Image 1 (cartoon, rainbow, N blue to C red):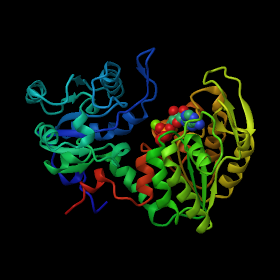
Image 2: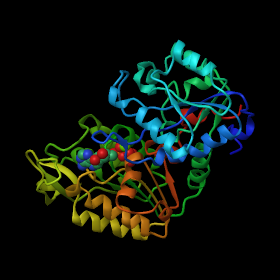
Image 3: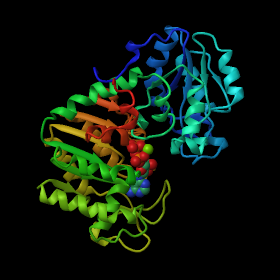
Length: 397
Ligand code: ADP
Ligand code: MG
């Protein structure tokens, strides 16, 4: 941790601290509550540190994908409530991120006060890292603290841009993530198995290339597998699949073959024509998918194959569910993989919002894993050795 600036490098007393966290938590629309507060919990040590050291804590986070517009259901009200409940601190939530009212409220803050600003992604300038917007945001604080490991791979205003204008430091969570993941980057025990699934295909597919030399076994599931199956020439029916990623997928499979890596796609899958809690499902070989079938989980033979490889691995990195695991008919693959990784004696690292939720849902404990990361895509990119914009800006010059 010699290379990046941390809270040890700054006296925060009396300072207005713009703290970027990743409070992008799942919320139950019907009950209006946060259903998994892992990510909030993960940043509490940083918040407590700042409060104990008499800072004025101004919290920024995104929630969901409002795409630059105000979406009532994506306001941070419920998140702020849960944050207050968990931390025991009084928390004031504002309806804006920038502007006069926000400035006024901040000027009234006393040392140790906590303010939560509105969803950063309600502003289209956030993801564009728009310089004017960045300046306005930076003008709210004296220093910037980044604790949002889940989004350090994004070059957004509140994750990276803001550091151009303010002295910037890593929070305790970010520091812990880097410390835990760093050794793995250097010298992982082999065989190393990378298990990737989920639906954020565009983010994850490119990363695989950078894993090529480190990895012995790639186990591919979830929506990501559908894209590879499609690229390999299979009919994937009406499955979630990114057609425009066909060429990238083909390149990756070719490179894996050249380098004699085991790049393993499902050879059987769970299909259904409807997505519901009581959907009828079939387990079929991948060659048999057709018509309006949707691939929604890995099949039984595939599970057995994946489990065999998990058993002989010395390092396992996992991000992304193997299927549409929120619904029972499609959750078995993810459940079996989660159990096997939890039982493994290997160094096990997993991450991602949905992946963490899965662990809780299946009643497994985080203690069963070597490191549980709050980042999914960010964790993969970090482990692949990529330079992450949100970490680069914290480097000592
Ligand atoms: P993480 O948050 O762990 O990084 P992602 O956000 O990439 O994972 O993906 C999680 C989502 O992927 C879940 O909502 C899950 O339902 C979905 N998913 C996984 N496999 C499939 C599939 N075959 N078809 C549709 N959705 C899928
Ligand atoms: Mg997710």
